[in-house]
Length: 374
Ligand code: FES
Ligand code: CO
Image (cartoon, rainbow, N blue to C red; front, top):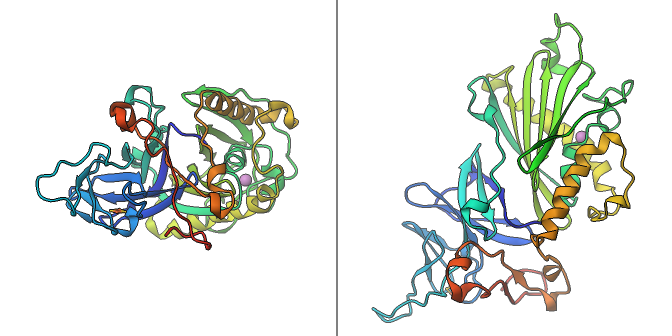
């Protein structure tokens, strides 16, 4: 898993003043909104005794730890320690990691890393989101896969005639024309023409008088975990942006956003959602069965063909990030109970406050036998 990227951790609609706990990259985060409605993302680990802030509550713009009542500002600094006599200064080290946060496309994004603003890779673009022609629906799909396998599946053009033969794949046309990977900032996109069968159900009704023709389809990715699929159907356009959130080494929640220019009345949202989930369910058994579960670092470890060019470019960029030291050690939080440690992704403040540089990057937290934190 990689630090120093923006991660979509939750849908906007899930986040309110009441703190929300989200597990991602093998760690726990807390998300809440300030009095003005601004979203805040922090490490869920109180620096005092490892209390879970997400079990606490908000007070104005601050979040209050439920254990001894320490209050943290949105920037992560502790503003109040109730046990201190009035006027006692609060040590600068008393702060939790708070991450730069943005609300975009109906997601709450957090920059999980310590890079200064100017060096941060951007949130992936999605110009269609602001185009009033499009109607959006959202959903989550949880599966037992390493997120890199979910990402590669999301950009995989050659699997559709096989895995999706029952829906939009055409088993009679498995050939993939040779394509170029268009390099985009921190990602890659490719466009091909496919010949899917007409959709069934209500979408099929719109096909009645449409001429059958090839469907321009572009697929691609943005680092580290976002895939984009754009399909120019005869009945209109559809764009699906999916943020494959790594929960831990074996679990991914693919948070998807589907935009469509046809059947844009809210009445049809349920049908669109059902179609998106059906596609994930078609992919699920095949992707969950892939071995090894983790994507190999060595590019020659699997046999690539021309139609895998997008995945190869994903692996190359991922390897570059690992070589830069952006990989996160998650083995520490996976071993026997006695060795469990909580690892915190360093936030930008660590670069500005020298006393913080190394503090609490790794912090041992007592874990009970059932895996719950004390
Ligand atoms: Fe959070 Fe003590 S553990 S205030
Ligand atoms: Co698929």
